[in-house]
Image (cartoon, rainbow, N blue to C red; front, side, top):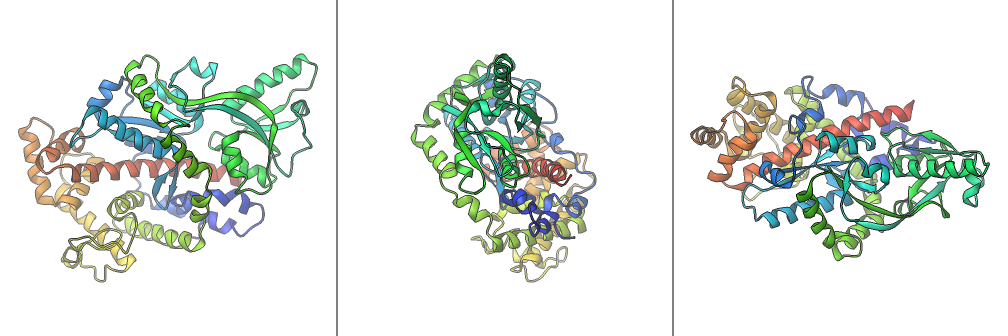
Length: 495
């Protein structure tokens, strides 16, 4: 079945609606009906893959857990996937934060990790309060209403303006009073909504007609709504100036109304639960060296909000076609061997960055970094692994062999069976068996990877396998959650 996103790229206004969705290349086939059917039937929902239950605590406890969960939104500017790789201002800043935290704690083999938890905008602050995440980093403007729910760091960005952005379907508007009685689409969870509601109160007091504020679905980011404005599907939205000015380089039918601001002097910051003084101190210490105006902060902004190169590279037709073909192979062989294909894609990204030309110093080949001896083994028996399809086939078949031979009847849940299989793929089944015995001697659970066998692994064989398994798991969580969000978003766009 042809991916409906690719199909609609050939038709009218839908080409505009889908344009920057292509930046999220991993979801090109993720959101298709065929792709959804290939996901292993008993795969748990993405939110169940996280730390298993809500948790609240301050920085000292996060350090003990070796995990800081960050609620992010899937945005083509701040957090997105480019051929399976996580990118964006938010991603890059949080990787710097991860380094900062580990340097501060002087960690060695077992490091504290930032775990990205993609959610919708209206889930950010409730998710913090309920303990689904520890930080919310999503270009959040500080507002009085939000301060009632959560605390904020010192500003990452100050002097922010919320400007009107209009398109071909918009009526003539030259000053802010012209907005009276006009239709504007806006997410209710956004600071824009608070600003527009305040403006409506002003209109009512002066006898003017209030604006018609049409609720936008929380699945849509600013850039998605901007695509619709550009395509003439909706007339106007409000958007932060720094984002709107960037996207004028991509969309040629939008107009940023610099003289029509519904908020000025806004401050953007990171959010966290109230009564978290330790986390607040650590974050504010980080912000000092990474906000706008610092060397690193300015580099991040320049990388993503000045140059359009990363957007245009992501839209390269040959690269898109090549990547889509690769995803279809993951779907094919994951279905054959009863895996979730996103899990296999996450493993391949960790192995090779999805680069079939990759060859390791020990002779491992291709996307799945398969050794020729492994491919030739009678339990795999796949030849010509220098070819992409055979490489994915061999790696996936070998994973099935590992699970069935070593973990099928073990008293583990399905997630841990996969984690142990990944560890075995990386370090070898015999070594993992010895690690499980060592774990039991340490008084830990030999049937649970995280915080148990990984502790023995770090002690006995070092960081590589620990990081390998952790990275795959994190990539998989992101892929799954983003997949679910994009499926919803595409469904809404087609309705």
